[in-house]
Length: 400
Ligand code: MTE
Ligand code: MO
Image (cartoon, rainbow, N blue to C red; front, top):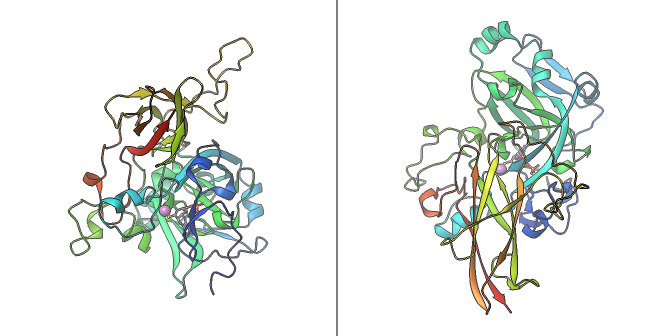
């Protein structure tokens, strides 16, 4: 069994596939903490988890004037340690809602194939510069006109095919791109499931490009030739089916569209009112490309009327943030424009008229480019079930 070396996992995870291991946390648990504990961070593996010996591990860096072979100690000592809080979201998050409209191909993710962590490591930019990347190399590398950075994982199938992906070179080189060769997650060594000993973290970019168990980085003219870059993780029209799809006709997903979902209450829940007769609704919101979520609208009547949710900024749990007073510490500074890599958790305490009632709760987020989520799934349905970001709806019963 090629999966016999896989690590132990947290029992609270909802398993979508055991081999390879794919699982997401229960939504209420996800929405509880701004930083997702590593044990319940969603896990998306295409292949068995490779066992990597940290002592003999080397990262190969190619396509540069000076190719590099870096040990973990090199990565930790020769480059400044950089820390970024970034949300990862799988392209297939919320795929089950597409499946409900019409069958799609892929793991049946709920709303929790997304999580937020603090990552530390060397900046990919610094490593590429150490390899001689600069204006002259830009002209010479990759036969002229290098455009991409390819990543190859150490996880392989029975035929030796490894996981791979690539990102635009501009993203990797940008001083504001924050692309990390990460050796830590939430202040500890990366867990085995999340890429030990090294993964790339590409803030603002779809999960699939955040290659785990990183073996090789290559600056190149071409995108990665891997299946997952070329023939997967692309979006298509609702009218495209498996007989007509041409994967060459669509770009690989990189930045993801604006997203939000309700983590509490759960669909089908029976709710009690709080002392003031209201109900509490909580969720997450995030957008790709470093675009900040600026507003989340919540409806308790299926989308007829709306109110604005309170964004629970930063690492606090949201308790007491509304109290004004001399003792209140100032809020954390907002992220630099274009670098809002982390999600925002949000909350609404909504009043409801008395009496038992069925309520359809809806949320939708707006990012700082004023991108908004589409209201329904059918017009964005696609055969692979990716980019599922329609208004999220849960139906609950509220009791006296
Ligand atoms: N990297 C390798 N080497 N192998 C993989 O299967 N899965 C990708 C990406 N990096 C994958 C990988 C996908 S599709 C996603 S969504 C993220 O890892 C998931 O990261 P996580 O398991 O840390 O949540
Ligand atoms: Mo993914």
